[in-house]
Image (cartoon, rainbow, N blue to C red):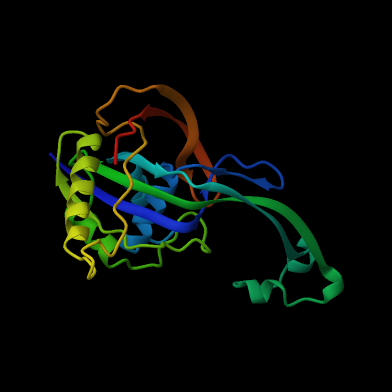
Length: 252
């Protein structure tokens, strides 16, 4: 059985959780909506193409191997916005157009936004063979993405290559182990004069989170309901899904 595995690592990432009012929290690892959006961007799917994103949601199973969930960074954010009255009958295709109004009609909104610092994750993707894209096509798209990739927010660019690999394994846990073994072997080929590797060895997976459509391997230690199943992009509508979490920390 083939499983696509790739790495997400960045100085800053943000994995949106349920947001009410001015507070914009971040989960400590990516969910299905983030992974569907990432693969959609790599493939060049437009945001309004809801059918294509639904296929990525329904015909692929996802598992997240958490190497490090990072530390919390909380940002007090202010932004200027025009009043709804000033926007009426005025085209505003860009942020610059939106703010092209007299200063006295601009308002200030306040929000608190959470980020994760130095998070590192492995992602496993498995298809039910009814999806529109074979795993090889997803791998190639991640190597040469059509749109810019980011980890939750546009300010959160990847800090390392995604290095997608197709692993022959029966579970996500086995796929993660095989991926880390390959990566460790590749790093070992590049050493300095002292014989030490030039790059840090990859961290082990501490826990695995997964939903339907993929066999993670370990028995779950926790089962939760998470509201990150994308339904409609235009209305920012998300549905509930069941997610399992298992602690699997291994020695480095």
